[in-house]
Amino acid sequence: MSVTNAQKISYIRQGITVETKPLQHPGRTKLPESLRREEIIIEPDEDTRDCKKMGEEITEVLEYQPGELYVKQYRRIKYARPDTSGILIGELPSRPLPKIIAGEGLLAQIVIDKYIDHLPLHRQMQRFERTGVKLPYSTLTDWVSATCGLITPLFNALKAEALHSEYLHADETPIKVIDKDKKGETHRGYYWVYQNSIDKLVFFDYQEGRGREGPMEILEHFKGYLQTDGYAAYDIFDKRPGITLIHCMAHARRMFNEALDNDYERAFYALCETQKLYEIERVSKEANLNFEELKVVRCMKAAPILKAIWLWMQQQYVHVLPKSAIGKALAYSMERWNKLSVYITDGRMKIDNNPVENSIRPVALGRKNYLFARSHEAAKRSGMLYSLLGTCKMHGIEPYGWLKEVLQRIADHPINRVQNLLPHRYIA
Image (cartoon, rainbow, N blue to C red; front, side, top):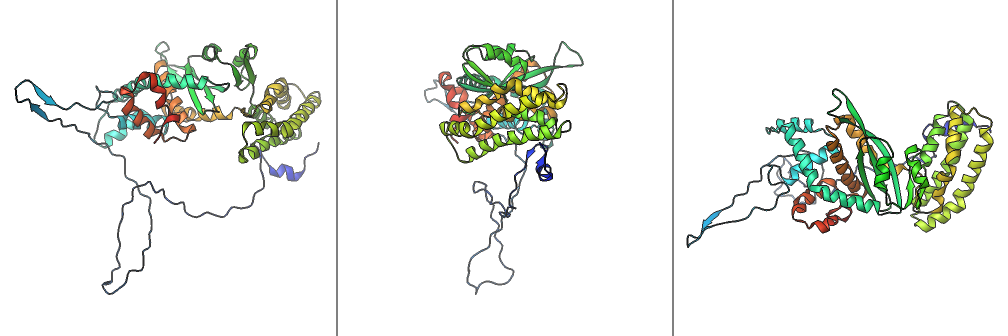
């Protein structure tokens, strides 16, 4: 099982490279037509009265000016009725939170700055102060809290739709939380994240621990395929009627990648064979195959590769130390091979759990900036916003425009039709 120098050179620690021809530079990107244009006419210095205009040359420069805080002032004219029976005055339009001074645009921007652009509230407070507007930190937190209270029915509708699926991804990620019962310390809570990759919906459920109680409650009525990593808390679902537990090929591949320094030849061979499976997925995606076509391709091309890898792992395992990195990588995959291979039986399923991991990335970026949630309730509210804004991202929806419109409409929107305000039903 020798490895050629050419193969070694082509290998990069995160995968296998494919030789490609150098791409020609496409030139400067054209600026979007949707941007406002400020025209500046430049005439020659010489006299042009006897000249004939033959055209013009246009040079565009992308500019920026800081966002503007402004005051929306409602002036309601009062009239006395002619018969002195009372006063006439126009009604104020509905506001999302009538008892605060912030409008829906400002509320939406504060949320987007924190949960999309990862700008903590105390930095936003400093930015507002530079414009001459002092907003206490407690005021900003109260505004975010009140906004979450307003859109809670929308989050519940998203959760119900996401779970109404026969195929879910699940994963979890930690979040530090200030606990009033632990002075000077933070509590390690968890977001349990569930993604419906077919309908492009995701929701974050905050739990104070990493035990199986959280997903057991959320998935109490779920029936279908549940894709996870190898975390033992999910094993309980393998025994629940109506649920088929499947695992993530990316996690198996990662263990062989970590075993390269221990046993290069075996680890490299496993990575090469796994890369063939991913190449089938890539080509199929580029061909825009439907679910049934993808199933046929997988059965024809991926099934023989999976069978060969399974036989190879059984042969190699008896020649390695069980506690070595390569031994652990082989044992991990062998133990889960049926659950790693079941994706080929249904074109709806993914080869790995990467879709839900992509939805978790904003949390990882956010906690590097704001470090922790200030309470368990604050962590729950953050999960609500990550859910709705993450669903916006999956559908390519501009989040500020969506959230501002929701805040404009939700106070007067019928509660029994609140699902119509969800991101995937939003029309800009």
